[in-house]
Image 1 (tube, rainbow, N blue to C red):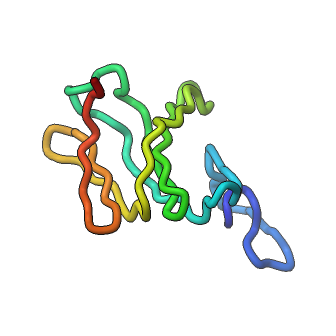
Image 2: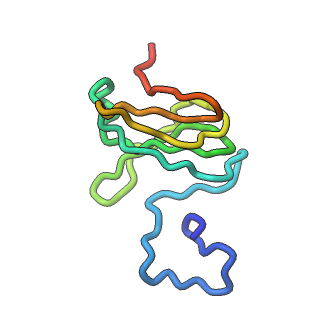
Length: 110
């Protein structure tokens, strides 16, 4: 699957597949989702339960919550870095973003 569509297929049998809860198009430079983590840290309690993800080419940082079977609280954090390759969490549940030669920790802004 490529988002909600079958990728490069003549037929599209989705039997046994679980579709994504959220999909976005290849617009504004987006090319490949980089999946992340649900924030479960203690430093920023107001974002607890938000799933963070990025796009490898576009470099933005987005999040959403999954409440009662639906996507809620979608947010563009206005943060951009190039080539987000991965995410990580530490023992305290704090979230990190890994880009091309850098590791960034998500912290409360000013």
